[in-house]
Length: 220
Image (cartoon, rainbow, N blue to C red; front, top):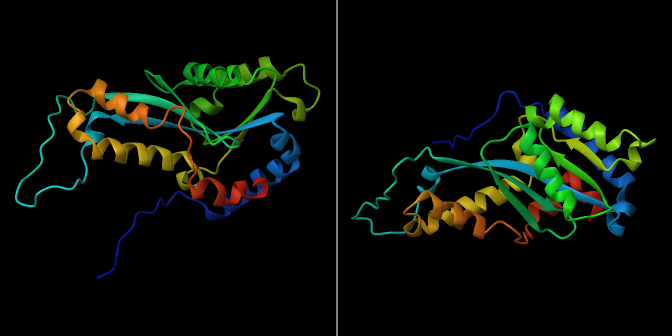
């Protein structure tokens, strides 16, 4: 019997390789600024936490089924998350949904931590990352800059349909696994959210994928 794994048929390996090389080239060009702290690099992703996420596999008696009381397993909380590449500190902020307005708010939230610094962000190609609202925001920030190297906020895109490129995905998985391990404290969705936030916001994540990813290897 052979093991079966999931594969996204829309994933283009050639595009992944091309986009990875583009990111590496850009990072290598700006390596000195990143190392000096003049340019702050964030890797960003969004997560939709469901109350039902508390259900999974846990250790327990084999002769007894473990049941978790959940009123509405589809109750949802959207989070924007960003890991600072240099410090490895993770920043989390909750929103009602993911859209252009909340994307702008989150970027401003990150910028507030670095007054007078430029920021570069790497993320996926979600529609609200590229929509008119966010493009207008970038234009308002960068319009008086004569060169892209002086932009206050620079955005780089991972290739589409390849979430494994983004190390923030590992942070989401680690946090959800933690919530499942402590399912006994998740009697309300508010408590589930507190558990999730406890192990993510302002925590430091020093895991191999962040440094072994090909896209970031040139700035280690």
